[in-house]
Length: 107
Image 1 (tube, rainbow, N blue to C red):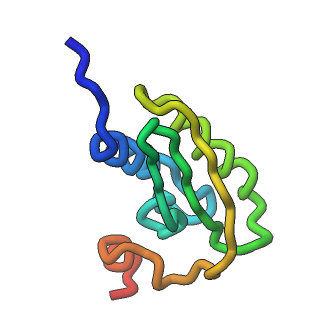
Image 2: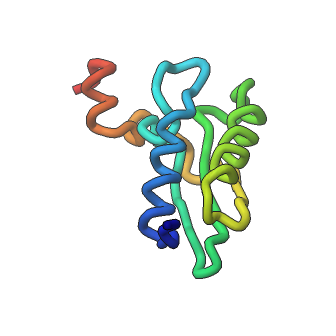
């Protein structure tokens, strides 16, 4: 029996997915690194992700951007994925999750 997806279950699946994508230069996943600014799922299960990079000239930006879109699109129930890159506001170490700050020795 297949369970119908909900916005909540899809959001949880997306977050889990993003926690398995790592910044190649910093050994932290992109979600806990604070690169994901917003995840929006509409009523038809189309997903929009607003994300940033640690720096505007990040050499891995294109790779990570494509990986986010591709990995989320594999989640069953999602109809489409749109990923938008922004640098407003710019990323800072304040974006790190508390667990990541502790792991990296910032707190």
